[in-house]
Image (cartoon, rainbow, N blue to C red; front, top):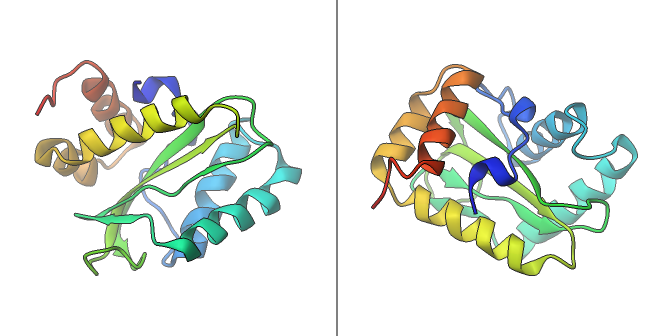
Length: 158
């Protein structure tokens, strides 16, 4: 599965304003709502579900990356966005370091295979130092989209 299959390009955030976990999630959900990927009235329920998932264990994977993800009945297909924080956010990551790159993923409960394939692609790309460096250095939405497109084209093959 490619980033193009689930990332709402209009919702990409090149400079997160939030400085804590809840704020990051809210800002990313707002971006998804503004691009039409989720409905405004569903945002509180989605936010609550993501925070409940975070209570089970942080989705801060380490290496400056977090991948908050849930299955939620309010979406009909896989949706997601990418955001970068140049100052870093304490996301209770496994390695204890700040998080700079966030990929939020929401999928319908009946599409587990798609959810897993998207997570698999994300994790594979996050292991690539060049991919991560380029994402962290991205200053504009266009920069981030270019990095994602290059990843989809296999330019960061490990």
